[in-house]
Structures are given as structure tokens and as C-alpha cells.
Image 1 (tube, rainbow, N blue to C red):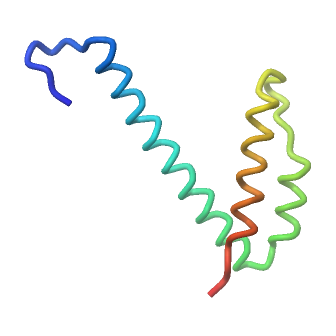
Image 2: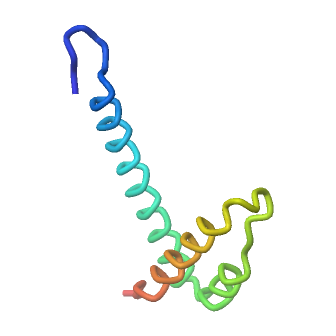
Length: 84
């Protein structure tokens, strides 16, 4: 996304932010999938699932909804991981 006068308009900035957020989200998803696959392959799935279920975000009480979302995603990924 180039602009000859090197200034971004608001729409271009939002597009760039959206693109970067999508890349970060995708990278995080891949990292969680790799971590879950490693944990399942090592035979520690049950212990880690219990840890995730009981994990809490103590640093910021305002992030409880986001923590619940993250916890649900990780638990769903654990259910889809198969050891080959």
C-alpha cells in the first residue's frame, strides 16, 4: 500500500491496521496450534487443559471477557489436535 506523497488518509491507515491485526491473529492461532500439538504429543494434555480452565488474568480485571475468549479458543484447539 504505497502513497506517492507519503501521507496516509484515515481509510488507508485503517486498512493497514486491519492487515497487521489479521497477520498477528493468524500468527497467534498458529502458535497456539503448535503448542497444543506439542503438549498432546508429549502426553500432558489433561494437565494443561486443567491449567487453562483454571487460569485467570490477575493483572487486569477489565480483561476478563478477553481471557474467557482466549481460554475457549485454546480449549477448542486442544479438541481438534490429533497425534499422527
